[in-house]
Image (cartoon, rainbow, N blue to C red; front, side):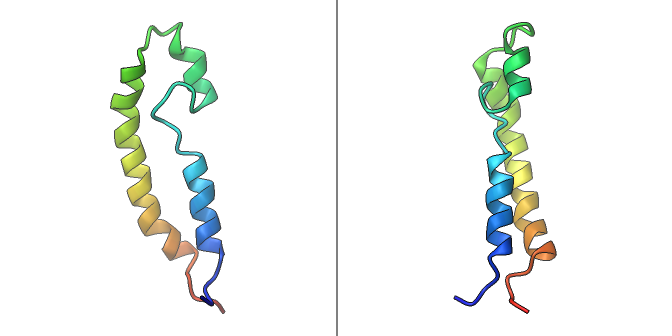
Length: 71
């Protein structure tokens, strides 16, 4: 395809860190799950908009900083 691999690798790195929708997705979420009295649906309610926000920002920002064209 003759395109740079960097934007693809950065997208994979970003997506690996966007585990906000479950208490098991991030260590801090697991630590406060029981002591805070949170339910699984609380994480889904807050994590879904955060995942959508980070996805949409990444969709715009990654190609700006890591262009697909090879130099």
